[in-house]
Image: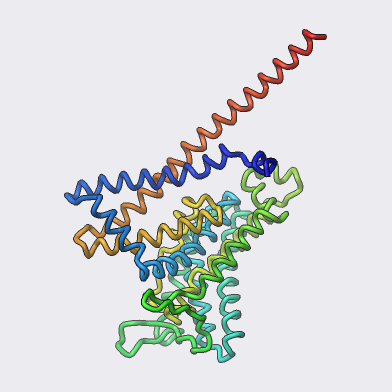
Amino acid sequence: MKKLTQRIDKERLLLGVAAPLLAVVAAVVVTALVILATGKNPIDAFSEMGTYGIASDSQVYILNKATTYYLAGVAVAVGFRMNLFNIGVDGQYRLAAFIAAVLGGALTAPGWIAIPLILVCAMATGALWAAIAGVLKVTRGVSEVISTIMLNAIATSIIAYLLQPGQLGQLDPAGTLVSTKPLPQGSHLFNIDTGASGILDGFIFVAVVVGVAYWFTLGRTRFGFDLRTVGLSESAASASGVSVKKMVVTSMIISGGVAGLIGMPTLLNESYQYDNSFPVGIGFTGIAIALLGRNNPVGIALAALLWGFLERSTNHLEFQGYDKEILGVIQGVIVLCVVIAYEVVRRYGLKRQQQRVGAELAAQAAATTENQEVA
């Protein structure tokens, strides 16, 4: 046990926890000042948020939201670990959800066959859409930021065209909602009825599996080691025999594959169809969650829960007379504080590391001098 404790760098662990905590505390302080500037009491606001956010029905809501946000965070984090900025997660997940919804609506197979096919279709669509950006980067040197932004716009246009009545879409009886053909009852994923607290999406278990797979692949396999090596230094990775171009394309494919699952909780557990009210912008939320969670599977889960809590509790504040923009302020401030806090902690950690190395070198030099004097 003692050896295990010695192997753990306590200072490094402390620095890793300090950055997100510092970001959240700073965000709370800034948000309190904003609420105070509007003439409201920030203590009352935070009290309302805490009371409503931990209510039983809120807990189910937060878990359902966190499931989607967690998948978005992992999809972005895969690219981040390779030093790639996959800003196209939003387009990848929406196109994947649309294609999967079309397939699911056309299937007449039993659920145990249809649901895996829908999931594979969604992951394949997201992976192929993300692969375009990866191929463009390694063959033409196109920045993945630019290409994925353009691919987001293209995906939106494709969906808008195909979702029209007469194409793959259909109008509801009221004539207000355009959607794909609904999934048959057998293709609905199981839900968990918690009683008065609400319905918990069964896809939460799939999200857990994705998180475990992400942790194992990046932390316990040769592929994960190569991926992290390329992210840290492409030249070092190339010198060790790793194909940087292959890893870039592969990581984009994996990121897109995970992105394809983001819309599945909504499709398989809630709406059972793709329509023009399908949630958008989740891919960009995933960027903030991956940053706050430091690309760590546990950290991303905590960040996703925090985001779900903020969304639930600040929406409640609007009905209590507070400005509805508070949610945007808190989220924006958290992201800004995360970037600043991580940079401050990184510089402090680098300084401490340099001091430690300097002290060790000085000790070695002193020991060598002493030995020479004795001899």
